[in-house]
Amino acid sequence: MVALESTIISHGLPRPENLRVAREVEQVIRNQGAVPATVAIVDGVVLIGLDNGALDRVANDDNVVKASLRDLAWVCAQRGSAATTVAATSHLAHLVGIEVFATGGLGGIHRGARETWDESADLTALGTIPITVVCSGVKSILDVPATLERLETLNVTVAGYGTSEFPGFYLSTTGQPLSARADSPSQVADVIAARRALSVTSALVVANPLPESEQVDPDLHERVLAEGMALAERRRVVGKDVTPFLLDHFHRATDGISLQANERIIVQNSELAARIAVAVSSSKPGT
Ligand code: PSU
Ligand code: MN
Image 1 (cartoon, rainbow, N blue to C red):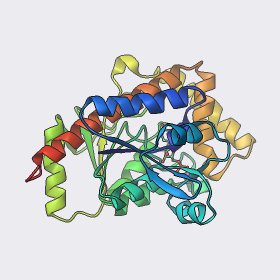
Image 2: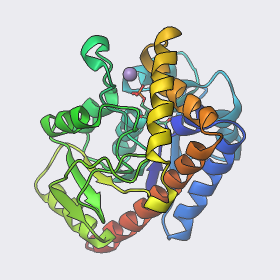
Image 3: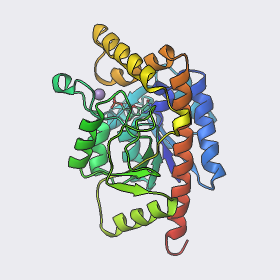
Image 4: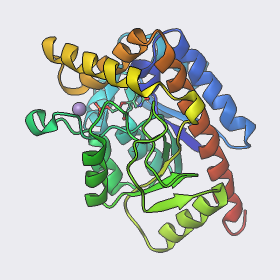
């Protein structure tokens, strides 16, 4: 099985592309012989795997909030509906025994965090949840070197997939070197088996870069990011609204170029996660 987060659907991608991408990603996982399980809370009930109606709610209902780990119990007790972040999805997936999880980009340390203290709860969650997350690095709107330092402190293993450099989400690379590299799903499955044997309690991040031909032009990226951050400051966007605000700004300001890259990222990561999940299940004794 492959877990999928739902904040990408509710707060990361615009309508109507969000629902189309959510469905496409599930199909990509099935095509590899794995089972997709998109995670969300609908009317107070945690769902691991969404039917069409639930997926539609997450994509189109304005009352669906963004829930990180701290929000989960609150939303459930209030019978609310929420899309789950990387932190919340990791917790719920691990709870039901799903070992592999696919997303676009992790949250991390925001630029300017020295003043704002804005650090994603994804980081501390990954420090304590033994799950394998396939992503394309952390969102490129973040302070990448600072985020890598925090991941190291939090005991999170970061491996490049087919690369020795940390990918940059919309950008193929950040130029930051990584100490671990994997080149096949079975290699990742071997690492997952060793982690299990050693009772490692933190996450493994498999960082899968977008091919260079599909990345957002780095100059365009830099310009749009600077604009977006200045706008966020002027409009006093804070807390959990920062990430959705910046992603939305990107999608508008690049005329959909970043949206296309974002979609490709999610699809390619889901496919790799499915191949890893299949390798994990075929390497387990008795399966
Ligand atoms: N990556 C994307 N789109 C998103 C996110 C990540 O391509 O919408 C979401 C994820 O759910 C991630 C969250 O966990 O943003 C991080 O938000 P914050 O920075 O507020 O912790
Ligand atoms: Mn934040």
